[in-house]
Length: 178
Image (cartoon, rainbow, N blue to C red; front, side, top):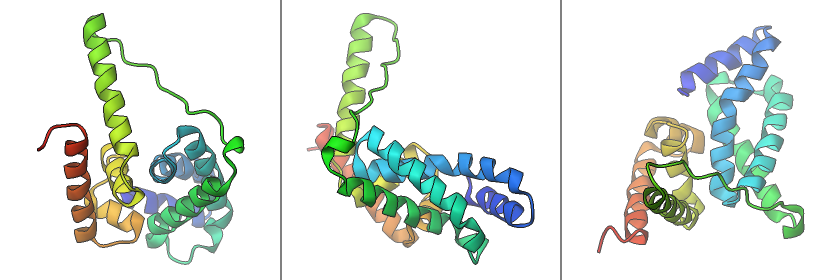
């Protein structure tokens, strides 16, 4: 979702339309989950961190001084919540949830597609968090490089360098580049 839409929702909530809070949180959830998943690598743990982050956002929104800083503020909260979950003992984090494979035209194609998807997931999970975050925000959440820079509180050129390095690393991990 474009950051301008999120900013408009923040302004609506702050201008006396609390019914827009649910929409703001729903539209922010993807960004929060992607950041948490990039940090934690575990879907269940990321869901826990994302839920906590969205609760903190709902409670803290009245104290946000500038609506234009919402996305970077959201990113900081998501990162802190993911760090909190990462510090928990492993026994408190549930098992990794797996998504069912898409049915393909036949068993061989389905197996090949599932193996490829698994290899990609493992390669992305193997990236360091600083490289994994922009990849997930761009390819999963559909954010532009500029929106990613805003969410991560970094410069546009830094996002471009991280993406370039991440894609190069992924290609090598998948055996697509010497």
